[in-house]
Image (cartoon, rainbow, N blue to C red; front, side):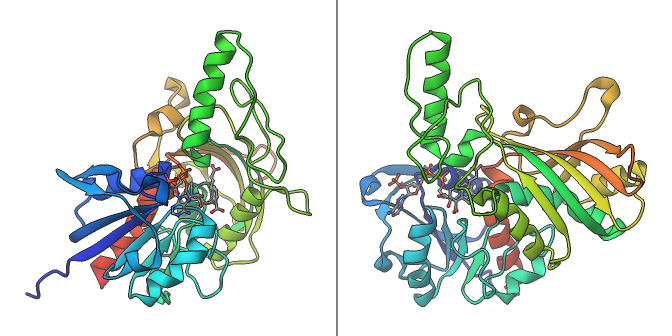
Length: 345
Ligand code: NAP
Ligand code: 3JN
């Protein structure tokens, strides 16, 4: 038997909320890694991180750092990806990019392994990882779509602050303490938008994630709409989304209303979801058992519950979909793409 190829992997944005989960996920999984290179900004160069019992030193992300890299997992923001992803590809790396920089580029596959794994092998150097809120929604929709045909999706999200990085997590901690101790504070980080204006996040619900577009939707909402159609290769699916930030540290929740081509039976839907890869059904109203952000934290799966038929539309179902936004929404989906690529390479 041929010897298994070993891969030199790089994590770009290694000190970030997503990057740290990537390192942890690579540590837990069994990828054939010959070497791990950790890259971040010049601010972090020299910091040490432990990986599988070894101490690794963070280096500055610059073009030369990609010499000899086989797979580069990028998660340092769109501008870093736009600047360095092609440099990595030119040096022979496969880039798996966690930012929105290339997601809608027709030359770049946008992949959720439970939905469109075949697209991995159409890459021209870069594979894009979708937005976290898109990923958990399409994983839950896919088994139902295969059986009933997808017509329309209307979703409201309840997104954790860790989706906006370490600084947003720190801000929610500080604000929560200040509110409880009746101290004054100035909101500084959220929402991330085009204005300097910020809102209180602790004990609040903020209906804005990312910048507003001319059509009244935010960029996060448009990401979910456009990415769903691209991943499913179907521009005919009607998708409408409202993205909301809630004072939760980890775990995005979504209320998803779906209309199918055919009438959908709840029992069959529950069974299809229970058998689907990457999905766990938690749906027992009798025992008040349903997915929660707190119980999904640290897990790779997408949790689905509150599965019920719409009272007016025979082809309509409602779902409650929860997942760890830093794992299936980011780090795990990227590592899963790498694993699928390596398995078939
Ligand atoms: P974060 O906690 O703020 O971390 C940002 C990371 O990027 C840090 O490692 C930072 O390094 C690094 N970085 C910043 N500027 C850099 C530069 N000029 N060169 C190299 N590295 C640089 O943010 P995060 O939550 O991990 O998110 C990072 C990015 O991942 C986001 O901007 C987004 O594009 C993507 N993301 C995707 C999803 C998804 O839905 N799939 C979810 C969350 C995030 P230093 O520590 O040295 O500053
Ligand atoms: O806010 C969230 O819950 C998810 C945020 C993701 C994010 C944050 C900053 C920049 C993205 C993303 O992956 O869509 C980006 C971006 O790359 O545009």
